[in-house]
Length: 295
Image 1 (cartoon, rainbow, N blue to C red):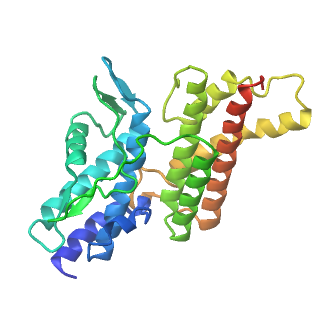
Image 2 (image 1 turned 180 degrees about the vertical axis):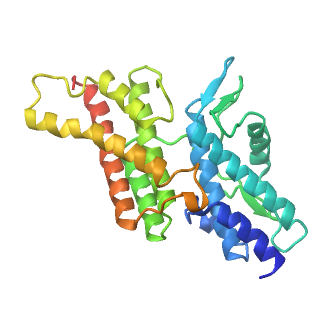
Image 3 (image 1 turned 60 degrees about the horizontal axis):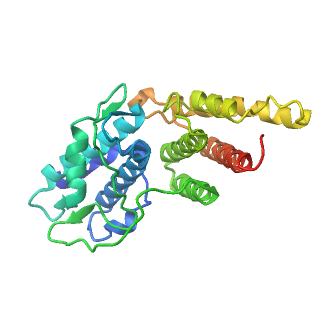
């Protein structure tokens, strides 16, 4: 293995639990297969976590809390990119960061923290998300400007899309990445449901607490007119949420590395993803139903 191969391998291993081919087509110009996968993974980490940050933006004249796990994932992505840039400079694998994202990264480094979450400073604007444009460019290449949406829409199509992406990760044996996508989908749907009631999430990043707030806002489980069989089914949702939270923390934990982390099996990952999708789809339907009548 050459020195360059080893350099890429080091960063490749750091991203083990997040690896995804979702954006691999944007990086086919790079001749090294693992470098392409690293760039695809970092692109996905940045896109997904800046999507989450956009839900707190713009900050106007006050600060906004940005959740701990998202902060850590963004910092990991930034550190991997900057380390690779330094190591690959003046080689056949040298690359640059898109000018716009270079500014975003530098600003993000000023406030992102490894623990306890981060405080987004005042007057921070929404981040433009690159779904069809590479964030990382081979040295000497030019970016073609393409208009892209800034914020995704939370709807049933979004849920189906996230399910498809998570299942693709499972097919490639990227189980931790699939867990992260499913958990992110569930958290964003809960937050969407809360904000649809003109309320603020009481505790961002904690799935069980977000679900409790959704349940209270939509008067779930407490309607005397609801069929008892439906009530039994609804009461199981809380158990599902707790199980999903615990599985994400213990099996796909973004904090745990090395031998201390337990590996999750494929069939358990599929159960996790499908349970999350079912829960998210139901909550979205509750939100839609509440516009015409009470739950």
